[in-house]
Image 1 (spheres, rainbow, N blue to C red):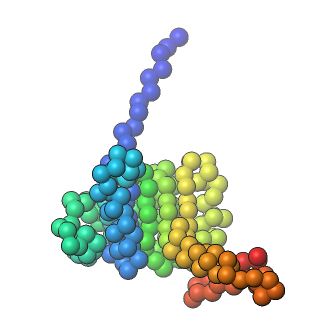
Image 2: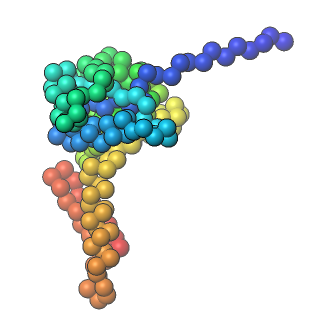
Image 3: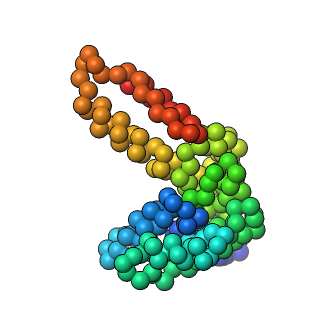
Length: 195
């Protein structure tokens, strides 16, 4: 009987790549990520981080803003364009997780999800665009499941703030004035929560 040889694939160089790290929201995402990256705690799961986007100059400026008043950390800046599938394949092959902050997602999200699935990379986004989220679920759920990848939308930007507000306020209400339905609406979507 022949002996089986298993070649192990080396781990990707980055735990996370933040895509679109020069936008308004992504600057805050990066600022919070740097807290974990620079943590002296050995239990911090974030050991390596890179940022990616179309314009390396803007990315470097964002990194300086996020680390202020300290000098910017030595973080790799990668060039990638959400309309260039090859560049997305490249960056997704370098990480365990793409954290996508490039919107509007209906224009810039689909290729990123596809590249992540192609390279078996987990995908998270800050999307609050209900139509896009539903489309990605319908279009890619089975493929993500088969490949063992996570494809997660709205990981906090649109949903957590509204939910925290609802939670806080719901504790203030007492019968008979307590509502039974809450409707939250933004420019792109509307959410109704039945209590």
